[in-house]
Image (tube, rainbow, N blue to C red; front, side, top):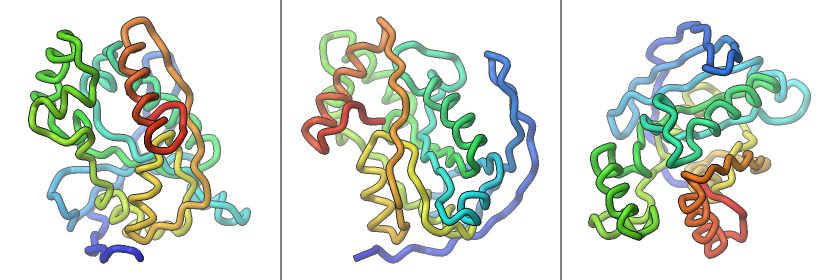
Length: 213
């Protein structure tokens, strides 16, 4: 049974050219919203032709991407967030859909707490154990605002670009029809190997998937 979803509306939309450090360029239609349940400034990036898949009888590709200042902006090698964001933008632009940029830093615990968790990871805990040691849940992200954004955009069934089954499950409970879960790439480096191993272990416990983000 789907959960009741408060109504959100589109506040502003504007076209923005994007350019990534590797030279990839595209154009996005950025949407802001009123009425999101947590009051944060989440964004939707319309990429390519979001209606193309629907007209062809399919579903637009959607990536709910949680903000990671250190990885997305500064290129931190301790996670794979930046490369996943870069991959998602191009893959969505190629087929049409939306990237939902969700202000849920550090799996929902916030930027300072995430850096506190990094310090605990340096002492031997993994990313999930560190969150728990700080008094948080392993993952505090909530996708209610993502469902609200999709509803405000008038999006019907979607294909979710993610390796994390919890995103699909939460969206389904919130009334979003997910036709398929499309896997993302794996961006392994010496600096993030332990992080990815922790995600793999948690995913194996939860859904027998190789990596979770």
